[in-house]
Length: 289
Image (cartoon, rainbow, N blue to C red):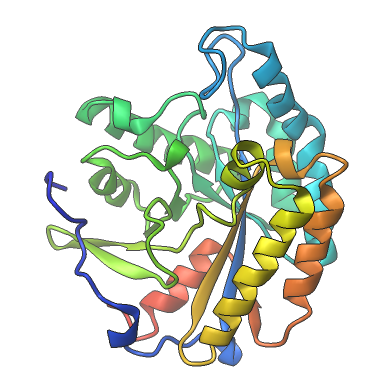
């Protein structure tokens, strides 16, 4: 992608699109994204003290890998919600047991950089390409399936990331949080789909940075769902819920997470999907834009 004023897609307002339908007449395609990440102790934690070791910021994140993710798995399995994991590829080496358990639940994996301590927008063309391709290769080696999706650490790309993702075999990217429906990006005659992710129904900005309570965050998720469910009666919508085990997986927040999933899954006409299921259906729907 060449540097440009706008993204590699047309401005298409929601009221000027073909109707989008989901399987079995669902109003909302709901996907849940556990961000399973690694923060090397010998590197600064982003947003932390800026030095290593940064134990006060590193240790809670390690708690998420040791304990928090397993609480989340239990709640998600209870409601039949499969995860689409935003996976740092170094998790395959540092926390292989998590990969094993997520695979047993038939979760999907999408690429999410090597670690969450290094961001693509600080890298040049060659370094960024190597990161993208090697992330896909490492996850494929660990899981036996090449990822179809991608979420950049910090949702940060460089000008070449989309081209690199297409080269790696990705069909969708979650970085562009500017829509409630998928859409196509055109990269010189090659394409990749953008899938709705969320910077709002996301426990990093709301809980960690915003200081909202677990109950307030669960209420946000329910209100988000209510609006998308109403709008989805006219044309299908996507709801993303982005979570981090070191935040949502702690003891005093897990019941609020349970409450949110209970509410969402209690409704008819909700498609509990993974990222690739949503995009595969969209690409085959005849309603792409």
